[in-house]
Length: 114
Length: 120
Image 1 (spheres, rainbow over the protein chains, first blue to last red):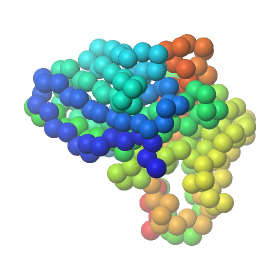
Image 2: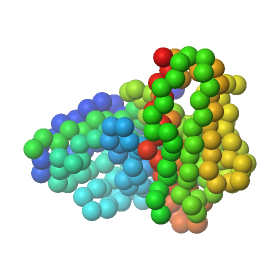
Image 3: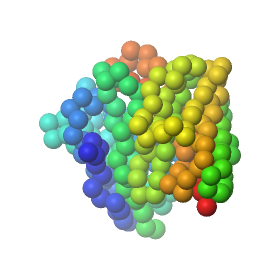
Image 4: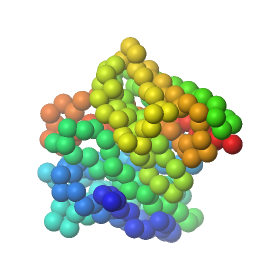
C-alpha cells in the first residue's frame, strides 16, 4: 500500500514559468512533510518542509502548500530555472508513530526548458 | 561541516560475494538511517540507529544484511552472499532530534551521496 503518492512521473516547464509538483498521502498520522531534490548519481538534497500545523511554507523560490483535508501537498517553484531540472521526492513522517522512517513517493522528474 | 559521506560511491561485485559500505554522518547528529533506492522508486527505509543502538529494522532487511554503529559515529552496512536483486543505491542519512519546534515535529534527515551497488 503506497502511503505517499506522486502520480506524475514527469513534468516539463519553460524557464521562468511556475513548476507545480503534487503529492498525495493516505495516512492521517503524518504530520511532517518534506521535499527532496535528487540529481543523477547523488543522494537526495533537502529542499523544504512543512509541519501539519501550517498550510504554507516559503523559502525563496520554493513554496510548499499543505491541504490536510484533501491529504495533498504541492511544491511550487517560481520562477523555474534550468538548474531545477532533477527528480523531486515528497516524503512524510509521523512524530507520534514512535518510528523515524520517512515514507517517500516515487518521485517526479522535472525538466525545465531553456 | 562536510555533510554525510559514504564510501565507496560505486561497488560492482559478483553474485555470492560479501560487500560492506560505510557511512559517516554529520558530526553532531546522533541518529543515523539506511535506505535503499531502486530504479523508478523512492528511497525505502532499511534501518535506524540512535547513537550505537539499532532501534528499528525494516522487513526489507533480510538475514543477509547487517548494520552496525559501534561507537555511535560511523556506520557500516554489510550484505552477505549478494544477489542480483540487491543491486540498488544504498543511502545513508543522519539527523539530530527535533528541539521541540512545532514547525519541525520530527527530525529532518540529511542524506549522503549514496553507494551504487551492482551485482553481476
